[in-house]
Length: 336
Image (cartoon, rainbow, N blue to C red; front, side, top):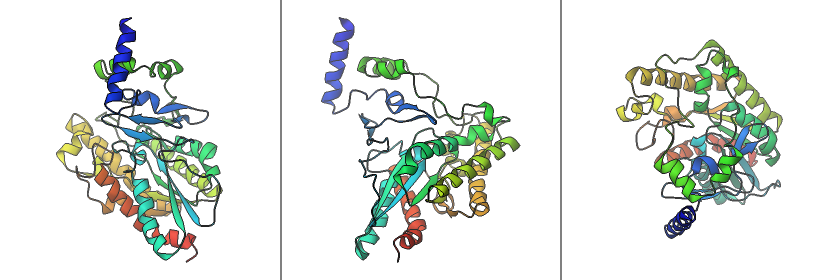
């Protein structure tokens, strides 16, 4: 009786705040199992709380529903990556993908009827292999013209590993029992607000001795090469982008997100900077266009809300750089 009364009272409370009943269990309701990538975003998700306002469409992309068919008057851009692409800290309509679409269409619609459609294919926690497996299984069939890659940070734990293949490269979704329990508002409140776990699902490397290894370097290069080949084989043009991250900043507050101790912060800065340089090297090696946002945008608290996640202002700045970098390619795609 007490449990039932508590559940009903909480549902009335969250409804009165304009929240959805899943407002306390974001880590559970975001994800569902995926046959090859381990997990993916839940289709048709609606989540609203004091922190989040997230909607996914019928195929599990953040944003409105899309038409799967090709049209001659549309250029489709797909953005792959993790939570930074997804827009972990911003509500619907403020992520970089939306900003990129607006920026490109503002010019195109002055010149004709052609439009650009940008699809947000970011999934929190995704590494390079998961991006490739999901692209092969679900996204290549959307026939994108351009695939923009804003990724790498979620591969840091593999880059510093002596044996990357021994790690779980396709971690599973929360269990069926957890996902079922998440339908209870009372469970969500108790499990994730009153008695939260200290374990972070998307934690950065924490060891002061962390540094890229030879096998980690090989893993990153090989996985990136495979992803680029997969995109090209699907008929799309891949584009690389560096990431904005606290690892390239000297701001004490941003550095604090990289570890509790100075040694850990320095080690994670080394890994993050290694990652940025290897994205640049990969662009040259594989003859891929690079949009170097890390070189063009100052890393400040105005742009970053933590070690890697962009603020609304940061998403706006990244979208502007992407638009400038992609404009010539979009013009080429449009036949001008």
